[in-house]
Image 1 (cartoon, rainbow, N blue to C red):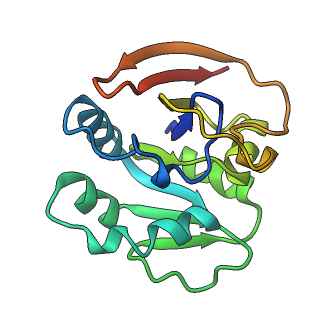
Image 2 (image 1 turned 120 degrees about the vertical axis):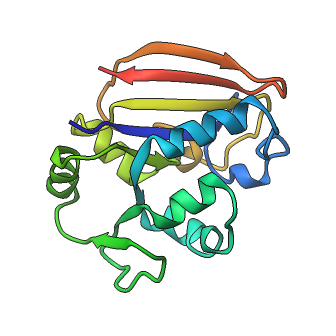
Length: 182
């Protein structure tokens, strides 16, 4: 069965919102880029909620000429949304009925793993239904502060146990914690 791997930027104080504004969120030109490339190329589908889609769809199609951009732009993409009707990004399908049933079916189909970037309602639903297999937290060495609970990694939901599988320290101070979801 395919695995769902979530890769998320998070600050040292647990904030996940607006990582594109953080000074440490860009390319490190080294091991971090290699890890991101390995993850993207090991997956053949991308799942996301509407908010992530709205952030990705205007940007990714304008990128090309590198393995990650070319792969993400051609892979199958699934957006869980009751409001998005006509996605313009190539190979994007909208899941507008029961997302849990649809994602269970997607996991059961043959293929490579499935990647999800960022955290939101979809991630919480995946965790709550035991569908998320791995959580990769890219802990950035900064304190962001929070505008409220909506900015935090896990604000509600059932107790979820994680098993630490790997720790990678990058030269720019980011630490990648890879957890298996039990």
